[in-house]
Length: 193
Image 1 (spheres, rainbow, N blue to C red):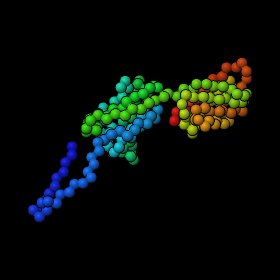
Image 2: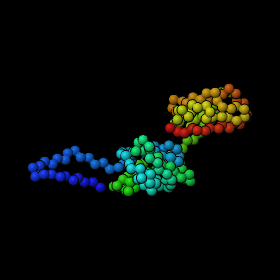
Image 3: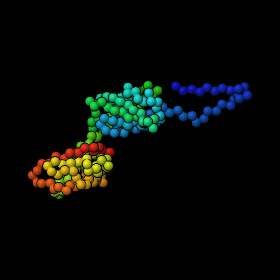
């Protein structure tokens, strides 16, 4: 709701000026996927905490929003948590905010999620493993050697280098791979960008 109260005196009866007045409704500026269970929502203005953290103010078709936490320093950012039973899968989605949050019409924002998938694993030589993924990777996580290990005596890599397209990682190992042996690669703490 919006309005002005203007008090005047008889000597200033004609001196009212309202110029360049802009009233902007609450809108979603963008949605950033943090993981398959978390989204960061950026609004065009600060929200009050009670409205920002009321989960019924948010909806995504087919998913259950289980939590909403307003950023402590930037009141225009809210992190939404999804129920473990309804995580994001590779798809396009629409986040809607209710009229009780916007105090006007329903606002919505389209966003996409692409689940990280290992598409190929090859050994170009006895001490190297090249892992290829379907999407760009987080550089810090991709180049952290402790995020990778290979069984059958290979262990953790001595180096991990992300490719220029950010979709492949070259792992270098001290121990050599043997022909005709099946290996299992364990990957942890790796997310798409």
